[in-house]
Image (cartoon, rainbow, N blue to C red; front, side):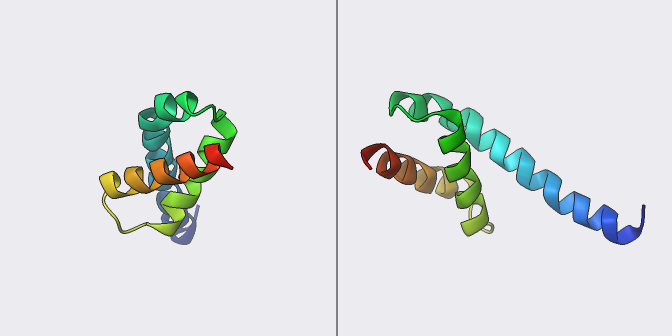
Length: 73
């Protein structure tokens, strides 16, 4: 592998890890709202993309707000 592909892979892995961490923390909340895993994952990925420099707690608050909005739609 070239140095460029290693750098690209290192950028992907933390994002995946962050999404997995958020999914674990939000699973019960989302389930209580009646949202399935795929809808939850889509919202969590979007929050991670929209708020890359924010603290995890800030992203979790935003994800919860978006999950509530999705459940009400």
